[in-house]
Length: 117
Length: 119
Image 1 (cartoon, each protein chain N blue to C red):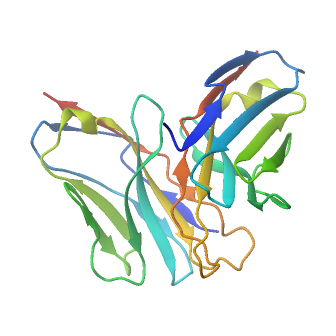
Image 2 (cartoon, chains in turn green, purple):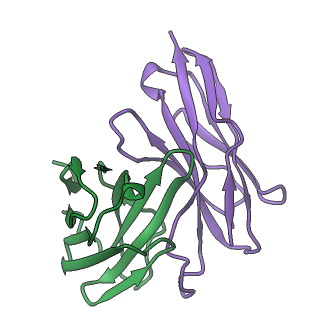
């Protein structure tokens, strides 16, 4: 079974609709991230969470919100979808070491392809 | 802010041959991590290899190795004995080691290089 799962894998929605993308992980990692991938631009960070009580904005958070329902679940919402939010969305996790530091490597889910019409 | 540049949008290599993908980055920091991720048609982002900036020795993982030139801010990926399964987009990424600084959580990605393997 995959360590980081995302649902749905593909979604088509209309402008103005609210949608939620979900991410679950079985790796037991504390930190979770949402990235967006656009053609020719690589991946950009939307939000990240250190733990259930700690949410932080990334570089492109406008138009998005997140919820960390549990250590293993991190959801991304588009309150009112617009066409330029059409992209591939990735969830990722990273691990806290016993020392309290975090390992630098991030592990990615399979991605959700979103099309906003 | 850090930037990562991959100047080769596409590369191709004959099966069983060796190919090198280029990556340069810009940073004022002295301590950081560099990564190569592979994205096959399945869209999954798969970690290929990582390098700690404080280590002079180049990282290797089986057929994958890097040439890390810190002074030149260069981080190329060499794939030896290329296989059909190596066909994918390859992304170079940077992450600061200064975890206490806000905003250093993110990976900064290049725009990717599409690698085609010719049978």
